[in-house]
Amino acid sequence: MSLLSPAARSVSTFETTKSTIRDANSGDETRRREHAGPMCDGTTPCTLPDGAALTVRPLEVTDAEAVVDLARADEIESLPEAMTELVDVQRSWRAPGTDLAARSLGLLDGDELVGYVVIGRHGRLDAVVSSSWRGRGLGRALLDWARASAFALDAVEVSQTVPVGSPAEAFLVAAGGRAEYDAWVLELPAERRLVDQPLPRGHTLDEGRPHEMRAVHRVIEDAFGEWPGRRSTSYEEWSADFLEGAEAASWRCRVVRGPQGAVVGVAMIIGSDDGMLWVDELAVAADRRGLGLARALLADSFAEGRSRGFARSGLSTDSRTGALGLYEHVGMEVVSTFRHYALDVDGPRQD
Image (cartoon, rainbow, N blue to C red):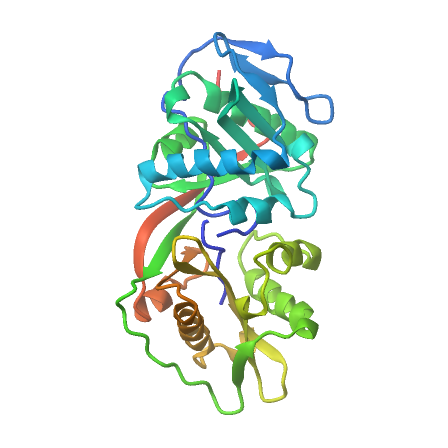
């Protein structure tokens, strides 16, 4: 049993649903010019279309709020509500190996951020173009820069998870992206009654303890590692995401222990500013599945969230896990559907 961080609530660079490349006219024949902007390892220039008099530079930590504002404005066009929050960006940018100088590009009209791209782990992209700048080839420019930069960083592909039916999906399809899996964001409404889920004899469930964190990570990695093509996450990468930052707190780690005291099930949770309790990761050891541990962890997480003022609960999952039915069975409802697209970094570019 394993679970993708809610869209997107990332994992990595807004891994599931918070990442979008938006350019309504991505297939246009706009002529482009070489921009004397930043390069990745000194070899990857950014090429902007003629007439796009924008400042091109790597993103900086101080750009985080502008990135959130642009991402949220983009999300409300295709989703029931905006999802990205400042903590998501902060978590992503503090991950080991996140060198904004080499892995990001911002497009500014004066002081206003109108587009950006960040290359996360394994070539996962977070990119947005402002709706007021679509149709001018900026999405194409960012994607081409990201593919070339990812190649220089030894990635084999770039990828993005985007809302089904959105301009972002149309753009990636036109760019030659291949669909790899579907993902869903589910929600437990505030009015939905919680049902207690009993644990098997000898098992206990409460907060994780500091000395158990490596065991928690191992249970998650073992479960997630069963996905075809899934790349591993080191303890350092995982701990930067979940155990560091102002949002870190012991209550965010829910642990099931077996009769001998070993960690056999985990839920990593976080509260958002909009009153949602997100289940970021959920994993159960292979030899303990079928005992109801996942249902118990979900019920405990939902109850913990409500006790802390988070009336709603949400999570994301995808078609690799086979877990959609479990979440619907405990009363959750699909509120958004996404699709993950990938493009080879050395593949053909749009002309």
